Length: 415
Image 1: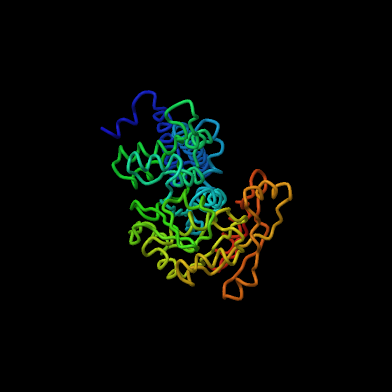
Image 2: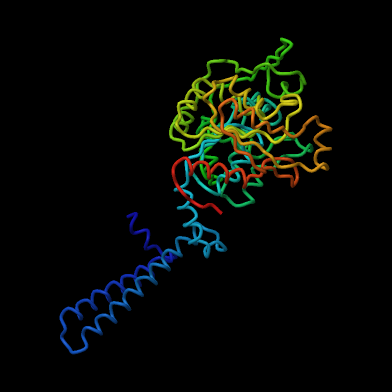
């Protein structure tokens, strides 16, 4: 009965099935004429009939495919089908990239990487306790969805309107003030499916993302900072407000179980990228989850730390590139990093004034010190200063992909 449904009226399929069938019959008739040779010009006639039949088959199949495409693709994108299919297949062949972090830094790099490969895994921190994510975490007892939402949107292949919808934030005129639609959507999906992991997967389908986004742990953890003066602060948002030199950070509970998919993706990675992002509150929390640092160290893939362009007030005041990387090593182990990407591009003075008021300055690229300690350094102008001082997503992703292909022994040019 299911097969008969293809013959329902209005499907715009029957006519093209009949057309293609007619073409197949003509090919068969032409073959018979050519083989039997019952008249002088039978060979030429047979070939002519076969060619005509083949053309009719191609035409019928083309129109049949167009009927399917019209259902699944917007009409204005039908002509782009070949380009879309080619691009999709090329992305499927791309390297397996694992990016670990959180905040805007992680979503920034994902924007660029998704243009080179669809084999991306973003491992995201779940220690966020501020803003909309913090409120939803307290009210509904779920993991904070904010950083996960940003990564989903960054990897989205959906229409721009859908991406804007997920990032839409409600104003102060309602009880939803401060909440983003995406956070509410993930929260609702979590309640419907009864599982945060399923909620992320279903949200990924809605946005048609290239790759996948997974939390570093599904346990409800809090980030704790211990300062040089011996004091402690609990909660990611409170840590940066203390403006006191941080000695170390750790998770509470300390022995939290890593997500299974994070282990699998790290083991299968062609390259592992740490950062960019807030050092103590976005990058390191993932590495403190039980077993993740060890899995990264065991991997034979290149392990790259992307050093921030600017220092962060209350967190990395006056830190150089080496000091950024050294903090990661001190919290984990020396073999967790093999490369460090350092920005050597200049930040215009007009931008610096704004950041200096906030206590943020360009990170000093002390590459020699990094090299002296046995690590590789990749220097480059990877800064973007259009609206904010951030990494240039295109330049940074090209460096990462080129490094991956180089270490895999492939010579591929990426435009």
